[in-house]
Amino acid sequence: MPRRRAAERPGFAARVSVRVRAGGRGEEGDGDRAFITELGRRCVMTSVASARPAPPAMVRLAFDRLCEIVESQSHVTLIAQRNGERVGFLLFLDQLPDEVTTLPQGFVAYMAVEPDHRGVGVGAALLAAAEGEARRRGLPYMALMVTEENEAARKLYHRSGYRTERRLLCKRL
Figure 1 (cartoon, rainbow, N blue to C red):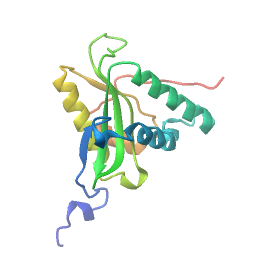
Figure 2 (figure 1 turned 90 degrees about the vertical axis):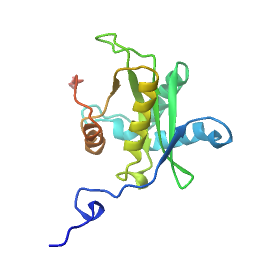
Figure 3 (figure 1 turned 135 degrees about the vertical axis):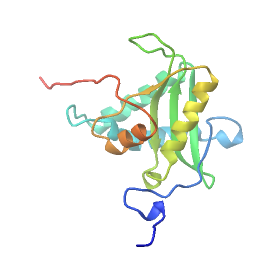
């Protein structure tokens, strides 16, 4: 049986050339904030679990509030591009210690990838760039939260070395 390239095997996506840059810098950064807002609002429902359903308008408002909170403190904005087109972003806080141990960490506040560009390495490139920046800043850990039902994101994080540390439990009353 002939060997197939990874991109042809089930469960393996073709990897693409992704450039990750700091957001909002120079002429190239013009429009980053609008891109983040628009893509984040389109993707934010993947953060909502079936255990706690919420109206999309309310969830989009919560995303807008999250962006305001991130912007009001020390953070890093990363933009992923393919062929000069913005295809994803990652926002991480660099001065938010872990709430239990108080150890310093980078905390991924939000990451989104254009639906047509998922599964080809964009998210992995954003995570790798964020981790590199966190290391450069002397942060020993990177943390994030993900909805249990977002299997694709959980697989990406697992492949990138993230492990479950705590769980948020919810019960409808």
